[in-house]
Length: 398
Image (tube, rainbow, N blue to C red; front, side, top):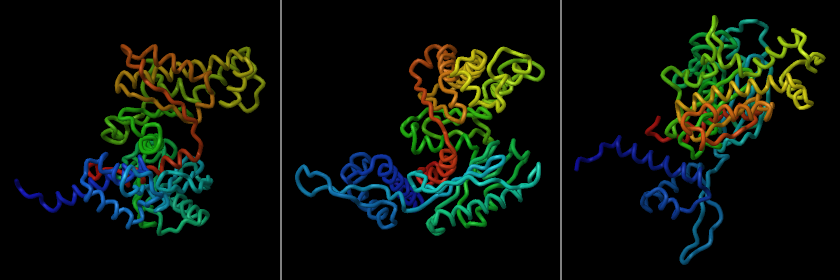
């Protein structure tokens, strides 16, 4: 048999190390004996890898377990505080920043205003603000800079995650802006950039409901409608980073055509509510000064039929859109999150009904649907998971 080249041997060592590290992360505390059984690696290989991970501070030993005869097993677990990650969501008027440990647990979080006095801020101005926000967060969190292993950034738009380039930003009207390099140069750290909805998908893949699910989709509803896709256990970006922009699929033909986002988003609900109030419709919303999703939901809770119908229509269109994803990709799980889930069952029950009604030939019958409200921390945690995903990714996939 031909001898393996050194490069191949090193790759196999890296694969084995990644396998053991992920077993410890996902199933720890775990004994060396269980690692041998679950990895199918030899006792010597497990011993060497475990010793290396402990020496690097990534894994730590903890108490002894019960013995069935012989030496009592010592359990291994991930040292969550072996390093820290900065996660950041860049928005139109603010920057959410969080510091997490290696288990994506948020240990510090803040929202800072994006104070740029310009209707069309330049990339240089925004990136300077982002760098300052990270510096501010490092100082406020008291985390040692030397222990930060990377920075993750989530933002709306079409993002090339491999190159860290924003091909299009709906907030800033940017085209082909290099986001990662200037920040990486300033901090001398790896920087990963991704569409904000995709960051939530990655955090679900590594730490959430999708951890052991090979086929799932994250759908977010709020100001817009978006999706993140995992197929065969792998996050799917598409050829140019634009996968998941299903809020822009055409739902009604016309000039111009009507998209899902124009029918199902929070902005759509608000638009139709304002339109109907202006037409003199019989609704309690006519007397509401600050018309927004929360006040529309409140009116629905208080029995206002127009408010109830607005939320139900948006939910039904969302369900029709999701059923298209179900028919196309056949996922096991749909996770629905975002600010828009605050509408509760006024919106979500019609969504569920539409998914099952329009799902082809039983594809939706065994589909699990999880509703997950999202706060500021979740978005920043998702961005941090860009880094964590790279840390735990198999070297075969890098």
